[in-house]
Length: 292
Image 1 (cartoon, rainbow, N blue to C red):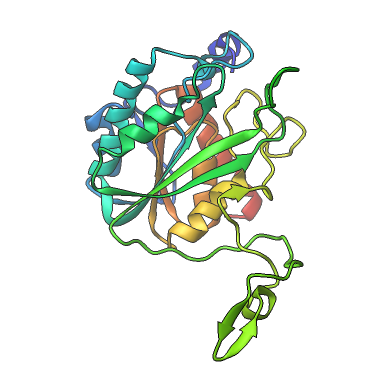
Image 2 (cartoon, rainbow, N blue to C red):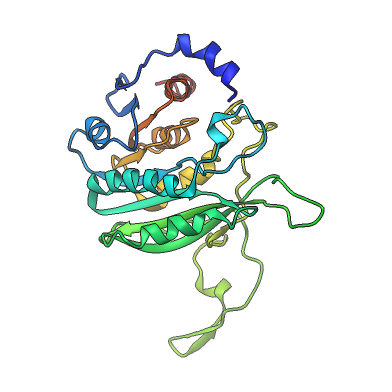
């Protein structure tokens, strides 16, 4: 979102810094708060623990339009200091058994910052166990005639304690035989052993389309928007109905929209009032379509 468009929208935002909006059902909270502030994070959680975090912080990568505040870059040391604060604030309100997902980027022009630095930072938090390094396929990437085009989105997955996890399946049919295993004295292949006609997702999500301007769910100006299907997959596998889901970087509000669809509660906020307003409006539209 450009600086010019943000100035036009700002007067219509119902929330100011420090304010929290609760939806009419009391299921979700949306606010204009700062992920670096321990006080802000505790304000919105109200001492209630979070079962699933889906964090989408700034990637510290400058891409495209120079007037885009959401795609800017700071010194990597400053970025890690920023990351330490919001990660610790997240851990402080996590349930005993919970999940922690982080979307991140890797600038291939600058030693793949900030991905490796962030991964090393995460080793310091003994409460969290690294579980998976997931990549989502992008529709298009910034490329060059002398390098490989960057068409991947990184997702880091950690857990605290021993949380619930439900196996997910893609829409991709099982067609390849292989992976033979002896069961009760009989050699069987994966097609015989599996109960589903489709395959499970691995740590490369090729079946989910990254949001781009031709898609119905695209929000103009929300350059870091995540596909609703990807957030739904995370929520379905890593939470139960009525669990608390949180996202400290609301942006286009996709985490909250997915939580609403799947009967989870959600707390989310953004430092930018425009994105908080966008999230409130997307929720209102979703409820009107579903008839709630």
